[in-house]
Image (cartoon, rainbow, N blue to C red):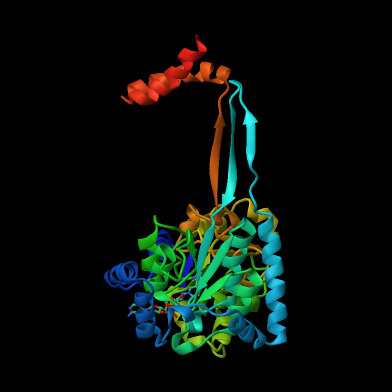
Length: 433
Ligand code: NAD
């Protein structure tokens, strides 16, 4: 049974606060292990990466076989059935088109002092994308990470993906090829993150590392942050559906289960103004759970972290949803555009009955790498901007320096930074003859 709450109940506020504070992160303390692995890779380079891959992934590599050869990539791609290839290509095309529109504009203007000011965007030179191995490897995540990097203009894009016991997911290889990835290394875990951050004789270091992974990968990303940029540390998936009684309970139930089936610590919440809808959706979830392939995982998630909240108005629903700041938010209401204005905190919003969240996971166009654990209050999903940086520009004319230089000199002196002040004064003296 999920938690069932009603805003009219006296204990509602306490129950809702408890829901917000539920700790779902299951991160074992792996930091000491990861620190040792990173130190080993920094000290021994390829030899450490190879030894750790043999130990954790039961795969014997040499510096020459760390990366897939072009022939191996072709052979894996050839194994992908036609239907999946066509679907991946459609997804890639739509993700590319969406992200093309995110490319930021440079700016340059002249202000009243005569100074020319502005900024310019440029891509990071090299990025590394972590792709989890085994069952958790999602070709859609390859597209969602690699395509924004390419659209941003990243010149060298590499993937690290462990292949335990040599097992390769051909769809991941094809997704990498379609996205324009240059090299795929068959390495994983903290050793892969360390190799990407610090480089080895064979693996050139990158500037930014993105992509999900297990606790070892997450801890390693935290540790190399600063040496390289990272995207975010993703937590378990979440969906919140707002309903007004006009939705099909079966559709809503399946949408809630589509997140619950990811992980037993995923969270699915329905907030509805209709008591009848709340009851019908809960009954539909139970019906689907009886036959769903991943019913063990989805059932545990729904039972332990699922919630159904009945409230009185859609404004109230939006307010509660903003407090959750969900990763995915579906507006399964009659007039989603009217409700949209009331929503402030959400990673991605899906409007109307015809927009299941799963469309956004694959082919909608927007990115599916999104802020979890209420971090949508202050952060956004992965975008082209994550692979770019902004450089500011300033150009003084003599007149501009005469106008604003003295204030800079005053502030420099007040901060006891004599050379700062003198660097301005020397020029002002020249201007004043
Ligand atoms: P993974 O690639 O993340 O990790 C495998 C690596 O972990 C191994 O290569 C090994 O180097 C390392 N490792 C394992 N045990 C170790 C140990 N005892 N000591 C040191 N290193 C060790 O693959 P995974 O383990 O299958 O995990 C995948 C993770 O990715 C899951 O937690 C899943 O939830 C997550 N995931 C998240 C998303 C998302 O979008 N948020 C998507 C897909 C997967």
